[in-house]
Image 1 (cartoon, rainbow over the protein chains, first blue to last red):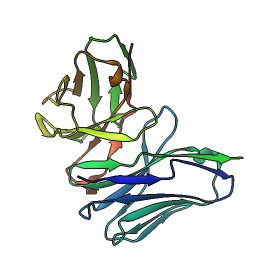
Image 2: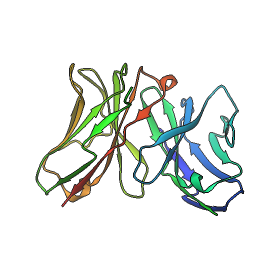
Image 3: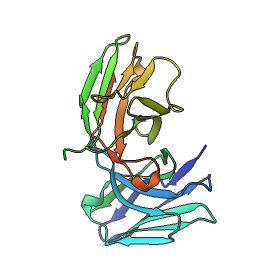
Length: 110
Length: 115
């Protein structure tokens, strides 16, 4: 089955700096890669996603890149704000289920 | 559209009791997925159901756990004879179709505590 690894597990940045979270996956058949943000005690919420026919996608301060050859994808958050503090999960998907990374706890220091 | 509704939000059970977790998918969604999130860990797939059918239960423990999605009513995740290790947050997600192209919407989860 698919194996998704996510790094780092914790990340602290100063407000205004950029944050980068990286994930690798093992199954080349995976074709959809969403990123979820989970605030403490709340549901995971989709913040951005990318499909395997695209190399990069951007939505305001958030961008995701995908390297299919190397089987890795990354989340980039620019101009971080305190409200960006949360746990971020990457996932790789094919067919019926998503395989999640173990999460990155991001803390943005004001 | 109220989104994916899960209840209860919090559930406390004594060891050996049964836990029943409910998930009502978004309107128009007929595909339901259950995930378990242990403290400090990611989301682990448990089971994928469509109405009246279990499509993929490869993530379900072989004993004590069962899931259903009847023709009418919510999807139910049942845990019999709960143990302390079952304490976790259980999230359900729904989608309107099969396959990654449809994406997921998560519910707010049920936090099960076994005492």
